[in-house]
Image (cartoon, rainbow, N blue to C red; front, side, top):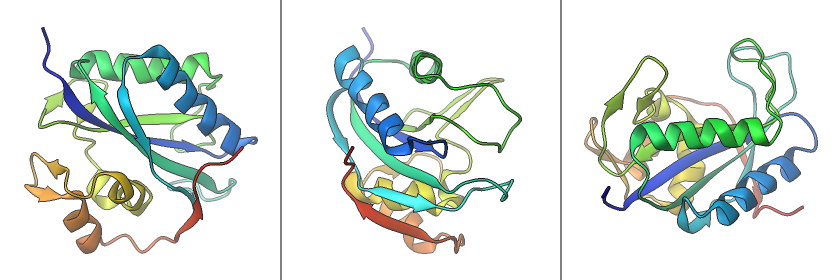
Length: 168
């Protein structure tokens, strides 16, 4: 049996109704039971990365306990995105809902589709700031630094504006 680990997910949406899409993803995770003891960060308004000519994102992070292994966790969040209506678009374009596995305990995993820990998490304030709300002491197993430390030294200067707790 797979041991229980702390999972941290990053959620984002920039297609209206953005806050409803985030809430639907969180509600689905509560209902599915694959992740237990869920806590959610505040919601943040952030500028898009890559293609700038699109609406701003709402981002938040979620932490909880799971027995899912790395491949199972990635498959779970990708299936969840599809259930919630994510459309396939070119990379960096608008997203109804985007859910990424940021950390899964101290797991280091790499496949053709995904890497855990997320390979660019330490470069992105829109991930680190909400993650710091809920798991500041969680450690990146490759960089040997806490979320709080990564947030403090992150070179990303993008605005990450708190909107407070998720409300719909």
